[in-house]
Image (cartoon, rainbow, N blue to C red; front, side, top):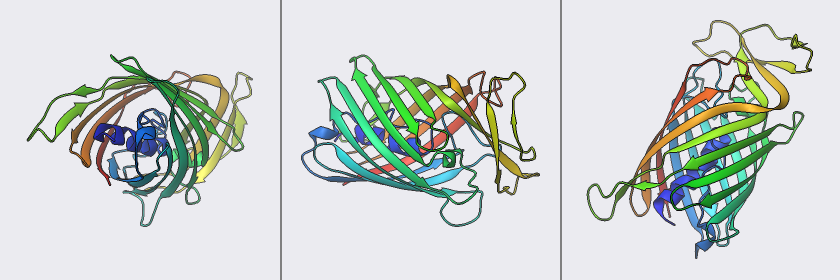
Length: 293
């Protein structure tokens, strides 16, 4: 598998667990592999990101990730998260199984299911939806690639999320020798969903908004970080399908035969109907090291 495709698979799964880009950048040639492979990754993020939404406090974390890829497209993956600012021990574990396939020469797809384990009252927004079923399609137009991903949260809320993205892979040439190369893979995406999740410092309560449309606000107690002056509560808002965020991603990678180093900037602007909407740009930065056996 080409290194930049390994990056797409790994970062797609990791971001899936963190809610920013789940299955949006699935590797398209997994089914062509002739043998079983093991991919490992370590990723640093400056803040937790769930479809462009964030917690009241900044939550930088480190993710350790591994995937076992079998001939034919089936894979098993797992990741462990450690929030840097909060206590000791593991902050969450994500396990997933999926299948990559091709429908045509330029059309590929993916189906997967993931289950996550989080401590009680986890600050991570994705802990609200520990079970997620996903399906995606990607079409290579040669000039650009387009992708559509649907994520269905199985549980009390039965939330649905959809992501449409347009991406472009650009080879910037070698850096030190003909055996390496620099790649730039900019992408833009629009995310919609039926669920908005934020954190607040209000007292816990259950209420409806004033316009009578039946939105429900559920407040769950969360532990405070060292930078939080008051107890936090998670606010889960469920309604009809609306735009959640607009995102731009700018990943640049240094690639060798079996490993790669990637730095990614993501800018996100929330949709107007998302709780806590502002015109402010949410910025996220990721640094990852990837290795394939």
